[in-house]
Length: 232
Image: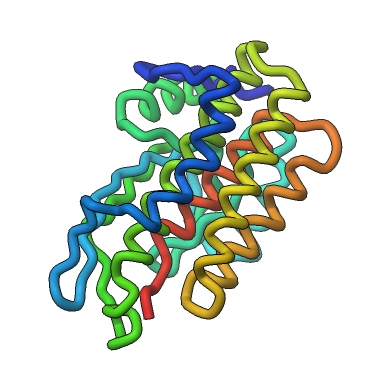
């Protein structure tokens, strides 16, 4: 059983050029984040993500044994830990309607799955240093969110055949440039290791033939950082 194509629903398509530019320009958000909303010891950053999951919640060992099978069927297979629970992800969407539609299609094909909604509204700044870099951290979150969407769109275009290997490789290259820009601005803080991890995943995705599931895995890995980062 193969997963159905993961289509883009109610989404504006990007041209190859605009995707490349967006990945680079997104980094400037960390410098000119005029809309940053910081209140004392908190950053306000609203986001909602809808993960289509293999219908299990268990420990990391059990999740690991399932993730490879999910990947073999065309899903992301990324293991997401949230609130001390491990989830095997198939895909992620930015609105509930899209996630519910894909989940229903999979359920109709006898694949056990469900949708997990994860929302963030604010991030607590856990130290004086974190409060000092509140705008930088706000910019990091905005940029990572943008890069996740670029990865998501590229996966959709691979599924529909609108993108081939050359275009997908170009998108990954520019996502890598975006992450390198963030790394240069976050040399020794709570984002540093996470950004290096995401850069390594981006390089892995570009190594060999690129499948849509590789972009979906990268997308969810980026969102993992957005959801779970502790700002200290």
